[in-house]
Length: 118
Length: 145
Ligand SMILES: Nc1ncnc2c1ncn2[C@@H]1O[C@H](COP(=O)(O)OP(=O)(O)OP(=O)(O)O)[C@@H](O)[C@H]1O
Ligand SMILES: [Mg+2]
Picture: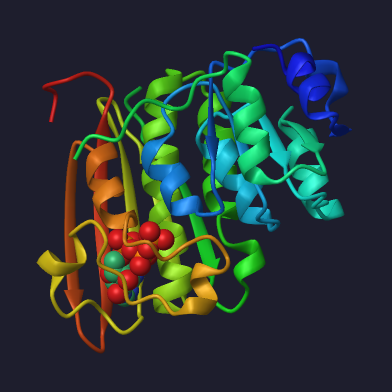
């Protein structure tokens, strides 16, 4: 799914890297636990989260994620914005909850990261 | 590449906001070297997990990354409390992290298993009251350990 399409669906405010709205994401991962993001995300994905701290951006960067959507109207700090900008990671903020954000994207064709196998 | 390239970092232990900065820098350096993106990703994940561990469990430490001919080596050393039972610590889900760490997005007990998963070799040496030393190697190609 194109990042610009996600932005429309979520009625989200783009916070940085507008020039990358044309990029695609191939899957999504929604959670507030960075430990899980580091363990399970596999491909060019979008992170949907309500957690706001610099490790969110660093985690996304380590995982080669191209977009972060903050749910429940959360807004990142200037330090977080600077780091995302430097690395071309699109950041957006939506007033929707995590559950509704995931539901909207899923029902419009964006699948999750593949099932966890033990 | 006959000369190894080495990057060294001090990882501060008193400030969680800066945790992960060394790994961000390593990723940048490796990208500049033009290494394969899958290798960079594995190094990034392994080092980041280890760096976060040094901050939350050991009060900081040092990180060294050696770019060698056949592999990248990550050496993490700290003078924290050490790990009593390494086998137990390596189990997915085992964590001694307090709730304050969990509210920051960490402490699920996934780090050490994830470091093992993303490296080709990993050794953990730890002495209670002395510290922990972890060495991980990520090979460019399979079979050149
Ligand atoms: N450098 C270290 N010094 C002392 N203890 C450590 C160190 N690294 C890990 N440990 C111990 O091993 C446990 C498991 O580590 P692991 O990285 O797997 O999980 P975690 O850090 O608790 O949570 P997560 O990595 O999912 O955020 C930790 O909870 C801690 O008790
Ligand atoms: Mg950990």
